[in-house]
Length: 181
View 1 (cartoon, one colour):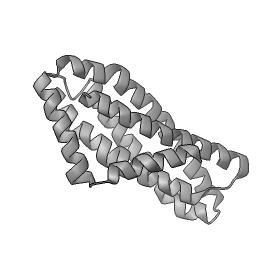
View 2 (spheres, rainbow, N blue to C red):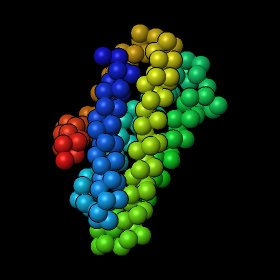
View 3 (cartoon, rainbow, N blue to C red):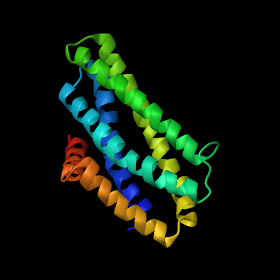
View 4 (spheres, one colour):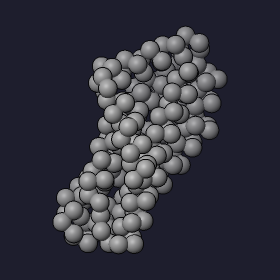
């Protein structure tokens, strides 16, 4: 698999969680109640899989290599993706901060969890579409075969050394469980 194919596979895992987040937001809308444990799992997965692992591969490796090959960091797709990563982190932080009070039934905190979950899902669905359909195809055209090989090796290193052995698989399983709940 190419580096972008690996990242697109990870997008499928993230999309499973986005579907679960949308269902949770709808449940909150319908019942006024929150499934705090479920939302806590979503926050954990987003922070540790989507951000710490997936976004790290993009920000620290792919985007840097694309810039080395002439893709501008500012004013182009990389700049947009980086800004959206920052916005996604802000939305997830807002969910995490509201969650303890939401779990106690505070209606304002419940509403904050719901609105920030929805904001995150909207942002990430559009973000993933842009990466899969615009940035990654552009990247595949400018990356050399050597770049592709290096990126795959570095992605493996990130998973093994920075994310930790078995962590990637743990979050894949969690995503499937959230998708089925």
